[in-house]
Amino acid sequence: MASSSIKAISTTSPFKASSSPSSQPPSSSKPSLLSFLHTSSSNPISLKLSHSHSHAHNSHSHSFLITNVLKIADSSETSVSKSQNLKPTSSDSTPTILVSEKLGEAGLQVLRGFGNLECAYNLSPEELCAKISTCDALIVRSGTKVTRQVFEAAKGRLKVVGRAGVGIDNVDLQAATEFGCLVVNAPTANTVAAAEHGIALLTAMSRNVAQADASIKAGKWLRNKYVGVSLVGKTLAVMGFGKVGSEVARRAKGLGMNVISHDPYAPADRARAVGVDLVSFEQAIATADFISLHMPLTPATSKVFNDETFAKMKKGVRIINVARGGVIDEDALVRALDSGVVAQAALDVFTEEPPTKDSKLVQHENVTLTPHLGASTKEAQEGVAIEIAEAVVGALKGELSATAVNAPMVPPEVLSELSPYVVLAEKLGKLAVQLVAGGSGITSVRVVYKSARDPDDLDTRLLRAMITKGIIEPISASFINLVNADFVAKQKGLRISEERVAVDSSPEFPVDSIQVQISNVGSKFASSVSESGSISIEGKVKYGEPHLTCLGSFGVDVSLEGNLILCRQVDQPGMIGQVGNILGNDNVNVSFMSVGRTVQKKALMAIGVDEEPNKRTLEKIGKVPDIEEFVFLNL
Ligand SMILES: NC(=O)C1=CN([C@@H]2O[C@H](COP(=O)(O)OP(=O)(O)OC[C@H]3O[C@@H](n4cnc5c(N)ncnc54)[C@H](O)[C@@H]3O)[C@@H](O)[C@H]2O)C=CC1
Ligand SMILES: O=C(O)C(=O)COP(=O)(O)O
Image (cartoon, rainbow, N blue to C red; front, top):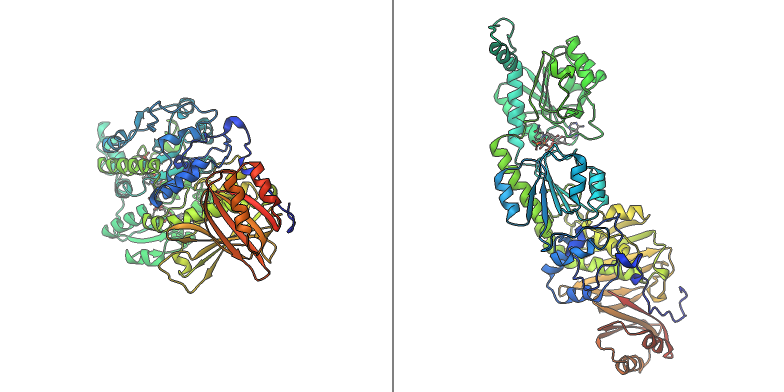
């Protein structure tokens, strides 16, 4: 029903259609705290916009509302995610946290104080999959592979994976994102430990400490065999000038080494501040006497040290790897060691851990090995354990983690400032989609933020995620959260473009208004169609509350709460009374009423009602002469 003059009646909103009745969350759900970060694409959930949802919004402060956006562990909400195929949580719905590798006691204490803690080490992949559907959080180190199968086996219950350390190459981030599972890591507490281990390997290797130790224990006294090389004055190439790399560089400078670094993303001034020149990859490997690896394992860095690159190195180069085994082609390294291109290697990490005992690399005389000990100091392990425990507990409480790996990191102060706009964004998304005829076929959404702020000073990712949530959830079985909003939008072919318009208002407020435009769709309420042919609505935050301020070309001022009847009518006396009478006679309580008008003698009436009027009442409104169209919306 897209035509402008036809009375468009929507008594049964498509947003209440459920994909499968059994998958419907209980209508008594509070706003889904758990739900925002929690999703399960394998676990379709119908998306009835229950009244209680709106009521809860009404009755809580914005600090509560923002938790609606972020919180994932509200006990009363677990039923949303468990509505099908899911094993029940523990009966008291306290979150269950599985720790699958050894974690420092201080971190375990934090976890015990918050949820049911289960420590189960050395689980096989099958055992992990069997267990995971009873867990809300999983904490791992580098030894647990958190694969897609794990997320599938979680059946929607797993909300956060905490990596007690830096490297997240053992977690399938894509799968985590698709399943709406937040991944957090502990990126800072083991930096020094890893750097110190790098230096330990550098010095031990250059003076053959491990080999000499083994020989003396074997009853030998080989003073001539284990003559080493000096470090002072030698060139060290630090590959990856991040947290660990820069600490290694600093320490190597202290040893009198000339340090260069290659890192395509590191700022040159940060390197200069440590007295390090950033150089190209080729230059680094061609000039270095020692090469220390400190980049993450990614598709771009996988086997970046291979036959071709070893061939470009200075003959007799020495390599230290405390990063990830996968950045080196290990067979190529054996060849380079055999040919003498690489004089020595010191390795803490391996493509496969543990490496096989008979691996040529492991057995090579010129190779010094440690079993992934970079982070293994008492201090680092306690620090990492606390860092990850706090991040996981925070995530389970619904706070956005500063160490989220697969979700926008929004600092708490930004979050608190944006909170009313986050609510507005979701409401606008929900409202916009309800204006689309049939509620579907949306492919292109344009969002215009009017703001007096400098564009760099306005982070819209959260707002975009909420608009996406508002648009997609009511019309699909997807459950959207901050983790998977962009992914689900893309999957559904929904393109969301954003535009910022500078306005001359107070920069004290981050956003002046948010406009949502949906193009190339029919509208069930023609008045919402702007001159450009798109459904267009605009909202503002007023007194901390979301308000609809523009609908198509009509200026309105309507609180975006609860149930709303929008009527377009001839601008003449008596219209409000007639509609008000119908509602009153049918026992429908009106919470507010607002009228906007245009010069063409058209008026737009917005009526807030306590509950959805029945079909007959709505039909009576439709029959009022001079009401040209109307729509019922549930916000
Ligand atoms: N052996 C162990 O126990 C430990 C290993 N690690 C590993 O060390 C590595 C570095 O950790 P952090 O310094 O904390 O991480 P980080 O993220 O602070 O630093 C990584 C740096 O690598 C750079 N980088 C990315 N791609 C690169 C490329 N193609 N070439 C050169 N540089 C590139 C990044 O720009 C970044 O500056 C990670 O792989 C981590 O998993 C970290 C701690 C302990
Ligand atoms: O933090 C990292 O990236 C590490 O490699 C440390 O690994 P671990 O926690 O000791 O298994």
